[in-house]
Image (tube, helix red, strand yellow):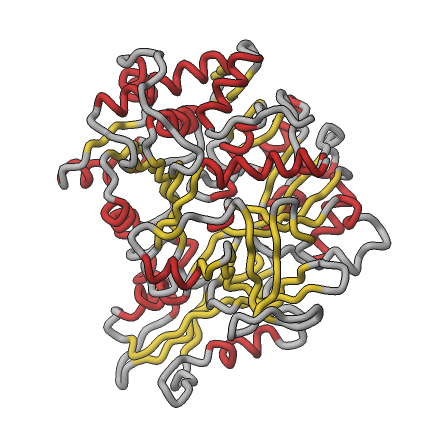
Length: 517
């Protein structure tokens, strides 16, 4: 019989604090927090947010790296019914400003490294709390550790994550408690042990907090009562040390991070024997890198496929498909997880048979509620019957394995960061020497894909690649800026004027079976 599971993340935290009050919940920067203390801190944060004047449904933003305090803030917001909006700290100030304005955030919590952004927010009238040790603990500890009198339902929004937009502006993906909690019940019912963690299992939190692979994994780990070893950001040497010191059992890394970890000097002799499963996703992984990782780390590997809009993984490739003799399946994204359905649809929305390439659609309890204040975008993505269009082109074989072939949308994935050409093109287009620009993704051995700009200069103007890149860097995050710039005479366009990106991409992807890397 399946025991009742919590319906909200606040309830999940309370459950583990009651059952295992002295168990370690968080380790960060020398601080060790038990589940009982974590639970009390979440109540304090919730009451402190309410005392600031925030009401259920309001947004609170966080700009900073991973920390135990940032995790307390997320759970406190969940307890108060306040929607948590973590912002990727690598974004440029104009991008952060857009998210703050679009979300209507009532308050901003900001790390000292980004104090200038906090000062600008104060000047615009936004309530700002500094996340240095003294300021945050003063804010938190001024409030009582009593349960806030706010009723939270499983369908209430808990997260709003911003993803790059096809039109150049990020859009807020609204995710409910249910989106992040219900899958665990389905996995337990189906006995999918290789994706289930037990209370007390150790895991490292090292992926960026503003991503579903960061804050989403954090909330999932709290839901299952894990011990979270929190790293401010990914450091391969620190990850290896933590694995050996704390006998880490569960780990999630993006493919680029796996490659960086394996090339670290400590990796050759590191003791990875405690790791039971290493999950990876957010971008496709080259088969040689996957084989190298399996051979060296030696644990069960699980590929997960999904997106922010599906709270991460809805498709997975299990450990048995990473064993020798299964190489023909190791290039697959996997099969639909329990509680999720996947199909391939054509341009007209009709289902396609096995072997046919079309758009991947997903039906799952994980699917987003929609995009914040963007009903038209929501209608394009949520197409009825519970189905969500992913924007990825793929095919399914007769055995139900999904293979990602390309992107129907123009998105580039570089080091597991999503980049849309429209954003980068907008940042470059204002350069005084630029007449026209198109941005594409090209294969890159380290990051999977690299951003490349194809630039047409105005007659009589001169500019070099460094100048174009520097201009873009002032306006958008560094990871979105082109790594290389090619200057061409004209961009290929169709009769209606649309840029033919596939024509631009083709020379760089020639000879490759997949048009994603």
